[in-house]
Length: 372
Image (spheres, rainbow, N blue to C red):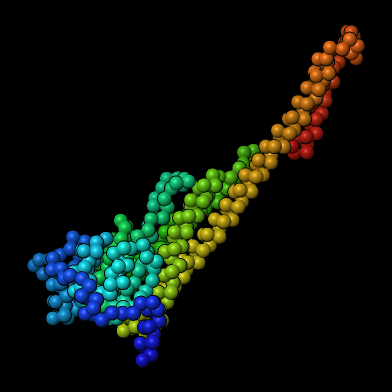
């Protein structure tokens, strides 16, 4: 009874599992191999069971339930019609099937009757020569996993996150693969989270680059005018997308590492603790990115404001210098008969000398005070 209570904690309150017959009745059986199927293999005692031809998912299921082992089916962006036959054959819950087909789900872990439905968001770093206001830094995809007693089904969305290399690597470790579908679930979780760590390191480099540009001194050692704020804002949006992939995954990994589950081998459950620790570490790192970008953006705006103030001070200083000859010329441009020193032989050079002296005096004073 305690195990049942633990498993109930994974299920959403608003969903109630349907009987296997009811779930299967929602779909028409399909005996053909869907074009969305990337690979369909039977594993027994940790080894892939080869056959002379490609199996359909229905044939693989019948073989597994007759001879033992489990089947691993990989699909890429299946349509509802393409997934209907597989869902019917394996008794998948309609709500989980709907989520798997439509995609755009947040990371989660749910239990439906005798299967687990897990959603992972894959993250890929987009290489770029220079960060711009429209640069794409984070490319996300999704991997949905159905884990049963004798089957494991992956539904992948997006161009990134191929599991082919992971499948080959698992096939080279028969002892681990003999643990069953839960071993595959752990391998995928570990693979996805390792991708998070790699992307976090690359994003850190981009943030360091922007931070260096913002806080580097300007020309002649003056205040830096900062960088384009749109670049910082774009990077902040990409980090937010990264955060949406990492943050919701913490709870599912904690459940898989702490709660006893009938479909998860006890030996495999220990390895989920390491995955949960990595997720927590990446989450802290991403939260730090968000706060750091906020500080960088505020510093950049402050530097732009300081630079504008410096420009206004220089404009004001030069306006004050120009005001002196403007005033003198304005006075002597008047058509008065009696003007000071108007008929004096040295009047012109004296007035010009006084004007230049005043301008030089004002310039020196303003420069000493840091206005020029």
